[in-house]
Length: 98
Length: 499
Image 1: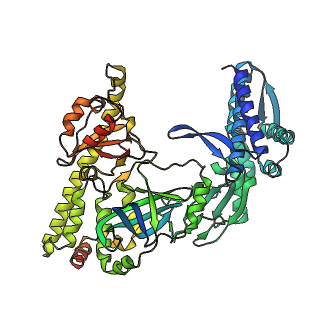
Image 2: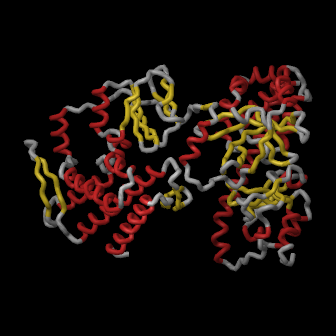
């Protein structure tokens, strides 16, 4: 898993940490959490990105299609699946998170 | 084009292709894609170089044969007809146009050409030695003459088919099995006996086998469980019912397999799985305009040490995105607030009120998202309807947007464009075609017409509101990015246009 836990930089003030990375049908998908410019703390923004390659250059596109997100997220974060299917458990997680 | 001209064109195409292949030169092959016709180039280092050559040669041969056949039919020349008597004896007749079966023979011959049954194993072996053009032509002639022999054995008349079937008693295989193609190799996968594999090949139930011929079938894979099907990247999974799922092949055909294959995703952790797919795509970059170049930085110990503590929020984020089904960025600053509020304990911790708040917030976001998406769709379809009449009417585009492009500062969302944060540099795929204007205080697109988007006076008034951001792109489904409207206008003004 090459990209796992690396930081991906779109620009100086647009940096993301790779929480999870999976290859589905030959294409790399990453679940990202935003980080601050100093890269020493997390910012609570999340997204799924899809990677494209042109030679050694990597490009990322944010997955915005609702159906794709619903399909891919359980693959990237299996831990989230039980919460997606179970609101009660999600509530417990909320308590834990705050 | 006349028949002669069309025939010459096809034969020249074929000749060019043969010469290119002989000289290891790149092959330029026209393919139909959803965007129309595209020329795809294969160099001799591509894995698909050989199979692309063979496919294109087969395609051209078919076109030439069909062209000649049509011409024969139009000019009322004799056409071959294979006739089977009720006692099973076979005969080949050349039918004249006045014969009652003449049209039938023509249609049958055409169907045969389209569903060629010949094997090209021989041609592949020969070609791999890179014979001369003459030798290749000689080989192709042999294949064609074999075709003639095979043409004489066509049985498509319903009566005769039944007779033959009765005689040979071929049963179809009703166990689940899968036929797939990886490059130019075909495999059959299933819990099959040798006899059953023979039946599958003979019965011609498989469209893949019909098109490629059973000369390509390499092995019958009989592994009862999950595993790799001899080709890197092609994975096979067998479920408890004995049904197969194949992932990673170029073409897959399921037989007697009732499981819906599209729903289950088989993922991999293996980095090298990417490369297989990448190599089989022609070297033209197909990167969407919304994709941004990224720099990878090495693993960060500080962040990794904070990861465990942050995990509940990360899972929460994942669940929230999956439930609501939106990407964080687009038109939803409320979502960031949502996560922040939830994780900083602003939501009261009583049982029912948490769930209610969660429902309210996600409903609210759903409404906003829904409205935005509906508006975007509506605008997209309106602008399609409006564009054509506008071009033919008196509307003249007064703004030259081409000043905007690669290197300019653009933003991924209207909110970023208006606040100035998260700026990006437009890539070479940025399309400077204006789509609409989004206002971040109302949270909606203005649904401007093409006329309005090109009217400098009108846009200048809109630009007085600093919350207006203009969206550029090929279409609403393929956007390039946002700019603050007044900045966009001053960028264009640099081009000397008087605003």
